Length: 164
Picture 1 (cartoon, helix red, strand yellow):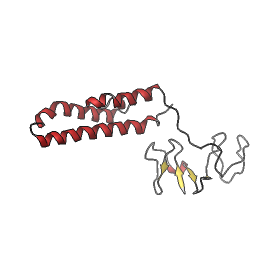
Picture 2 (cartoon, rainbow, N blue to C red; picture 1 turned 135 degrees about the vertical axis):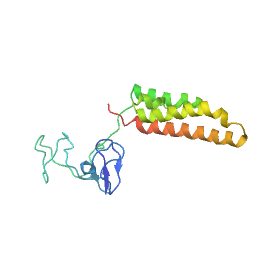
Picture 3 (cartoon, one colour; picture 1 turned 90 degrees about the horizontal axis):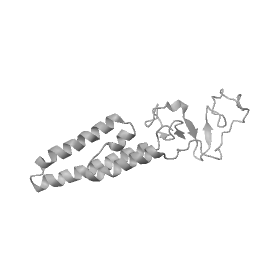
Picture 4 (cartoon, rainbow, N blue to C red; picture 1 turned 180 degrees about the vertical axis):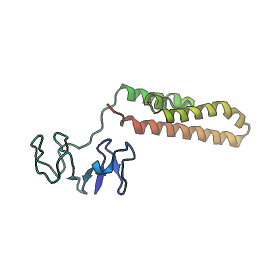
């Protein structure tokens, strides 16, 4: 049995009380069996309103309560907008020049942006003093590549999850 979060569409692992991505409570998640059918949902798939326990029809819209897979997925991701493309571009292009955190600023994720911008400052101002010998230069290079990849993954992971 799998639980899918109503808020973001991510799978909630068994034994967890809330979704790690958006913070929604797990007891409000849609339960899906191994065949892909919805086995329990306390919300009407037609109108989205709460259903009383054990009801066969929705008291608000009259739709028969389905406990099988609907014709369309219950949770779909939205299309990307201009702010998403801008955050991706500001994560990739300045990242080639070791400037990190601009994509997180566009996504309004201030604490992560602060951490990445702080790491950019550390790389620019402290890196020349550490690059006196060959071994520290190699470590610094891999640190820059790792920061670039981590910043990109962070922006890409959060691009489709913002509110419309």
